[in-house]
Length: 219
Image (tube, rainbow, N blue to C red; front, side, top):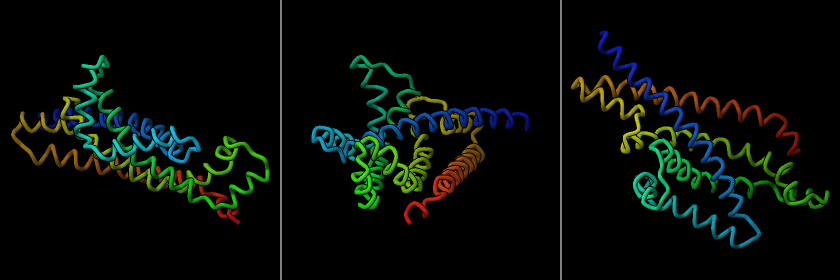
């Protein structure tokens, strides 16, 4: 029993790494999503082209290849990355590409009357987005952002391929040392599920908070 408590502690230390990767990757994905999504609806064609190229590239190639490029190829180009940095970069940019289309779609779904009201008030493009369009669109983005965050959490398992000591890596270590497969992988199964529940609950709570007064605004 004492031996297994030590192994469980090893997996829990990996859970801390998984949480760190998830939070950092989500932050990068959020920035990439807004940059890419806003770029897609830009009035300037070079920005639209760059945003489209980014989105199509990261959606059209394997996350495994992206991870290996970040960790093994970028150092050959003079950009050395630690396993943590490579994992965050690959996961953040990959999920951000999918979320960018969510941003674009949510902004486009805001009623035309809102844009007309901004024009009537003589708001600049920045003021229009900052004070009127994005606050409404962000609420529409949240449910899908929540799904993206959960997919990112589950996707962190791939960083074990570059020897980053996340939960999956530590579960493999325990499996090799004990010869047991069921216990370590059942443990990380439960932890992944628990983390997913926390993520989805947090997103729903944020959505309820930001939705207060939304119906009044629409009216």
